[in-house]
Length: 496
Image (tube, rainbow, N blue to C red; front, side):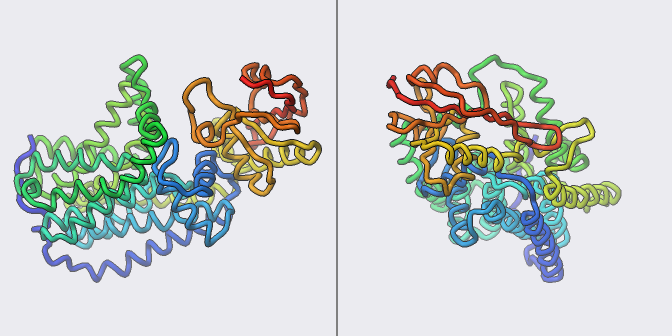
């Protein structure tokens, strides 16, 4: 079992890191520049989640159907300055990843030494999962930034017990929760840390501990109010996303999730994390090792259990890896595992280069098995152009869609059309943000253009007196993949 530990940071109270700071900033600047250039040359369209976040940013709010609001605020800020192009929608991502790496450098330096901090930052910034996400604007990016910041502020709070670190830690947790509710895993990790660390329990008797609960709640209050005003839809969606209401026990899903972590964290460092965790729990370790294990392993275990009971996407355990990166890096350096260390760096650098270059050839690349790796992010612009052509040929009062993906993509790529884009409502509670905020509720004198990726279902067309096919177009979504878009003119809404 884990044993009680002394105060954190005792191994490196001076934090002498000047010799490593400048090289790190140079390395991170180079990585960030490469990723910004890659965004400029990328041939991918916005993935429908990205397009959805962009559409949210057009209506800044304290909440949205499936996520808290921070991602929309970030996109609003970048596009207000840069414009609405795909690269501008995504431009914040490389900077957030660099910021996360800087906080991990500071945490690694405070816990161990400057060399450990440097390599922790470099390895994290080049992890395969980070290099993959550098091409996509997602809620995981600000989540990882806030988690990395909270990790460092937690170290400083434990070492110095000053109010400024408590307030910064509370701020990081609160902002992280506005990015993704998974930030609240930090409290689970903190609870485990306090359970095994008597030196950390002073927080339970100090006003700073109360502030760590109160400040994030205060930050979340506007989002909580928004949810109350909208039937708690975000919380309901988050709970429903795990799909725990179906049959339990899915060992295949769990195995798939764990194998995916080899790609996210790396084929060498993920197995090392498991070995380190087992050894630390059985034999004990330094206070620093246990702190990092407490703020990584519980998230991985929790999501693995969810995968076993239902399903879990590979990125659901993203919060595992800031602390885990420092822990594994420190162990490789301490035990002089030079071969594994060199292999880790090599894999990360190769993944960085491949994933930076590949989007520039997204319309030509295929996988060895014959699949198109960018199929989900290709062909949406052409889809919108087909719809634009239909709008020119007919006097339509609105566009109606029956799928969140096509709604989001048309909102983005037809943002200058001036034609309202509405979502066909679900029978019952709304199932996405567009059914909540822009449902089709009444007809217009002009015909309505129904745009679907499947044959128009009777549940839509039966509500109209006239249904006329407009066209069927097959859109390329890669060298071997295509997407069929079906256009239908519907007139004479009968209600219902």
